[in-house]
Image (cartoon, rainbow over all chains, first blue to last red; front, side, top):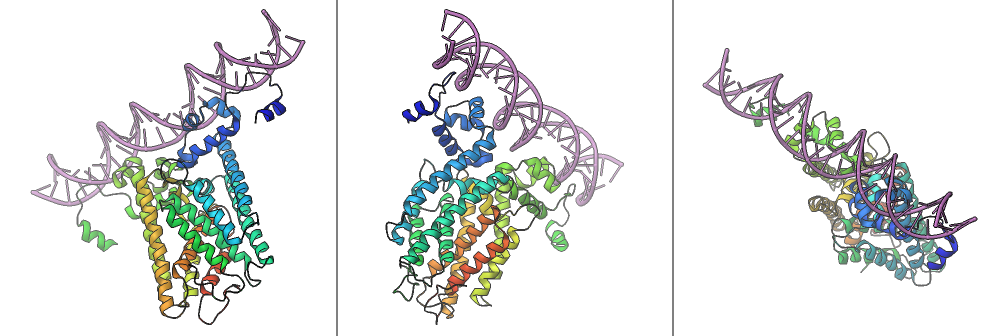
Length: 219
Length: 219
DNA sequence: CCTTTTTTGTACCATTTCGAAAGAAATTCC
DNA sequence: GGAATTTCTTTCGAAATGGTACAAAAAAGG
């Protein structure tokens, strides 16, 4: 961190920044997370980041820009977590549960009631009126879809899933399970119940494996 | 309607209302639908309903009350549609597709880009900070969950689904499919693609029927 | 016709919100 | 140490927002 600063910015000319852009963006995201885009004022964000509005404006542009950057920040974190969880080094069942457990940890982090997924919880609302947010939102969701699908195709090749299994459908179940968990977390469903839900979905998906004739018993 | 008015309100004392409360509430809901709770001003709602703010306040209380009433209005519509679609008079497969087709019609109604589900699209954001909205939101979602589950239990009794089928899991797939469609509609996914997604989910669910050993091919 | 009752419409108020301007502060370059 | 540069802090302003007060309007009751 310190090295990178020295490398990239060698010796900046004027007064040094009093904030770290990365952590400031993260704090701004946290501020948006609970109340959403419209429900969070720039003063709220200023308090959360410790910056004042002019500095915020100079660093990230206006409120809209700031939100879009926060969303990109969230997604890049999510992609990374997804990549690690679905690395393909463990059984499919285990890796899928890693995805859901990791998501639950994120959704139930923070102080008050669970905030669920930042993107689904806040960008869904804005997507209709703000094309940029809609694009960033849908782009991120598609990447997650693809991550599930890629992992399952690999599982099929490796013999973890039946050659007959419809990968597209199973990946869709994996994605929609993530989405329903994101929503339900935000509406107050207990973490344990959501984990139970995830286990059932994983059981269903992994039921389509060789050697099992009836994937219906998904205990 | 006219009769009911004469019955219930016989002869109201003062100046008659210039609006119909039911349609006004519906218009208010439509106003909230695109921009969400925080993103919609009382002026927006006043324009949408043709009422002015004092009348709005007298009729529905403050903005928060109005939104909660709009949400209840939306849910009651949804419950009714669900009840009709899952009446149990047609094959499960057909009735499930009725649910998704009906939902898609609703999600893609209106002028601009698709607005998806009013509840999921707008209440998810507010659920964290507003316990009343959270309660109304989760209550509605639970009723939809139960409607799916009840219908599937009936299907199991009727022999449409295998006795081995895990109804809870299948109902969860049905619900999460509805949720993912609601989200994706709002993020700009084409209606045809969402219908394809619904067909796949229905195929998966109804694959757990007697006489099929492998429900994996869900074309 | 006058009183009572209820709703409407205009106007207003206090607060919040977003954005910008202007000068002070901190650092590098020469 | 002074000039140049970048950021910070204070302050302002215009617009929007939620909510309310008050008089005019429209109906029924007597």
